[in-house]
Amino acid sequence: MKNKTDINEYYRIPILDGLELLNAKSCVLDFPFHAHDTFNISLILKNTFNTKLTDRFLKAPVGTICITNAKEVHATPCDNLIGNSFFTFYVSPDVIKKLNNGQDVFFKDNIIYDQKIFNELYFLSLNFNKSDIQFEKRLKSALTSLISIYSYNKENSYGTKQLFQSFINNTSFDTFSLNKTASQFGISKYKFIRLFKQETGLTPNSFILLKKIEQSKEMLKNGNPIFDVAIDCGFYDNSHFYKNFKRFIGVNPLEFQNAFFSV
Image (tube, rainbow, N blue to C red; front, side, top):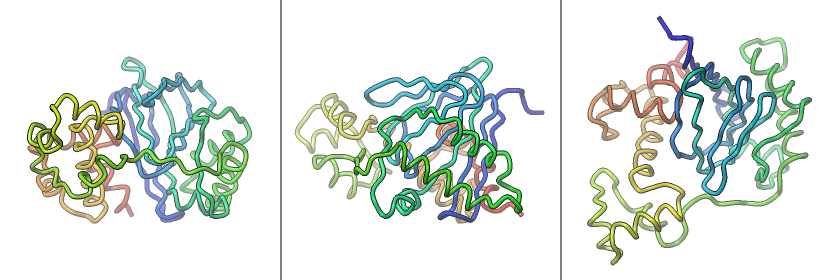
């Protein structure tokens, strides 16, 4: 039987390049620093929603929209007693860009106070599985309003700068050694960690773990057996995989995979 806290549900809808949804009810997880390839548009439903960015700490009250841009490093520490409730739309950057007439989109203000847009998105969050409400059309309209009013036509990169870009692109993290890598750059491991975090927003270990999680998501989407995914992505066993996957995604691997193969 599920506890009253931490009841999270994950969905995937075959529209807008594969829209993904997270319905978090009384979530008590502490999501560590990570980033997504998508824009995360979250409706705050219960308790103030805390978000840590690399340069500031944000508090989103109930009734607001909290946005993290694609590839923006962030952490979300939830209330560990009664939890936080929120609903997140994971929207592809290509979709967002298309809705903005082909222009890059960046939300400088991560917390949006707009009752009209919030109410429309909230209605859609409650009725996304109904076929008679023109869900896709209405979601596009709400997102277009959000973009036109609150975004900037400016490309912001949260990727690595030149020092580590080639290293990341050409390194197999399965055999990553901090001491060896730091030596290759001619610096101490402590300086390597500091510079790497300065440029990526993550420590090397967190970056590698996030890479494993992203790889596992793609394999789960393709229907690979969970145990095989765990081993192939470098986790010790299913337990280790389940624990880390839920820390980043909010649901366990089976719940995530079921969202892509549910009837």
